[in-house]
Amino acid sequence: MASPGIRPGLARLSHLLLLLGNPERKFRAVHIVGTNGKGSTAATLASILRESGCRTALYTSP
Image 1 (tube, rainbow, N blue to C red):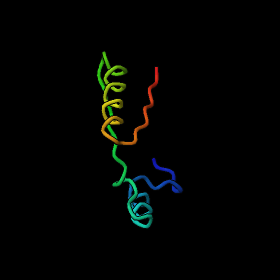
Image 2: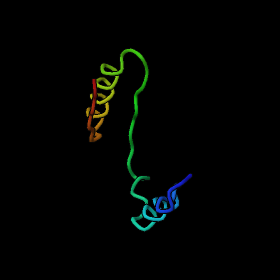
Image 3: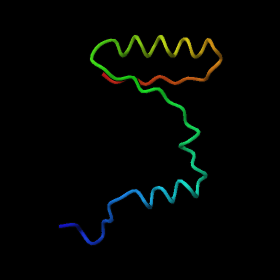
Image 4: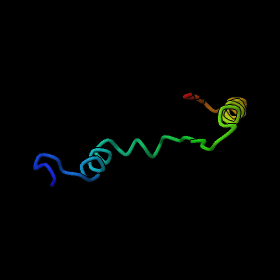
């Protein structure tokens, strides 16, 4: 039984993003997943991209 005040779905968020000019489409990201080697793969890729002139940010979580 759903709460009358909660409307599930993405329609409102999609409308907001449209009003903002769809900034999520300009955001380029690489998401590395897997069991082993994620940290070293991410660090290597970030280094390659920086050397190629790209701006990078690297976030890792234990």
